[in-house]
Length: 438
Ligand code: PLP
Image (cartoon, rainbow, N blue to C red; front, side, top):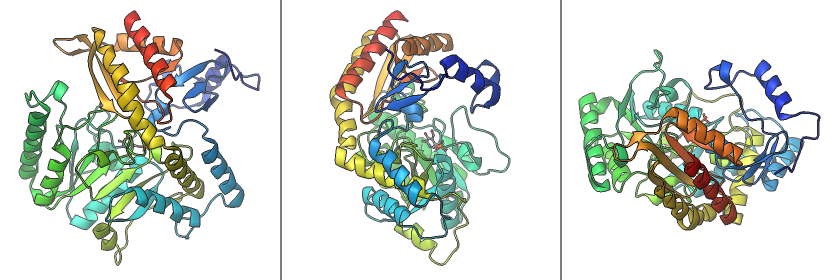
């Protein structure tokens, strides 16, 4: 469907050619790139330079929770730009304070401060630093199946294939988290998986030496690693272990927070309260780079008389702050969090589970607008679908007008939290056709 052709003479081909000649892309071998040119977007739709529309079922990097070009957020950035486009973190600024207050209003009792960062990785970086300074301990325990960002300590805390051995980052220990479909613990029920994963976590803590461990760092729902909704009791069990051994619990809500799971914070659906919360992505849908750490009272007070050695020139940038204020207000007034929850329960969840009739679908799991369809070459053996067939599926989905998010052998179904019932159904129908054709 052709809608919004580029106002310039640019075409997909011309933009691709200039991109290839000058842009060095992240996480890619540069030689074989063919990135889709994106010219614009609105709500759950984006279009390329030739004017071809796609349902954005990736939310870009699972961050455009409020949809593309939300008019209130765009206007707030424009108004702030007209008033004050930059101010150093050391100054007080009304918009930044309002952004912090709105984030704190969504956090549980007992959280009193927000430290702003430029994104998710440096949020984790600073949360780890706070935990180390407060406890006087060094080690950080995180999951193998996790992603916490691509900076010094965050990429070492990451447990998936992107983990980067880094001689300057020390003290990172990984454990297997719960993942019943591919259980490391020979478990055959969610309860057993939870109990055994906790026993494993405790054994690792004991073996490492509890008094060497500053923090347990967990994605509330591991995202890029597979949208692994934790089984009952796992997060509260991790909290109990942290308490037992004097360890701080950091929950990484960078991908899961701000409406993605149908909650403000994904942990709101679980019986757990962290000591530090990291956030980014959905807090302003990436309209301006921002992230942060929500700090509980005792940790905030620890730094009343001690310097916290952290911060960058752009921390708490006014354009970012204005976009956070507008996003949270718009989400609250427009029921975006509730929409994500309802769509997940009533539309996306049931429609995606129906896809299990395709032999290649191994498991469907998720919540809100945060779903993974795990694809297998052999259902009984649970053999992951080969990379070549994942590649064909991805191209076919694009050709059918859906921009997908794929990771290893999984299709992550992660539209904006403002997705409508009709868009959700249309997207799943496209996936259904593509799976049939696979
Ligand atoms: N933590 C989680 C759970 C993420 O999914 C990501 C990014 O995907 C990050 C941290 C890193 O965020 P950023 O890319 O903004 O640094």
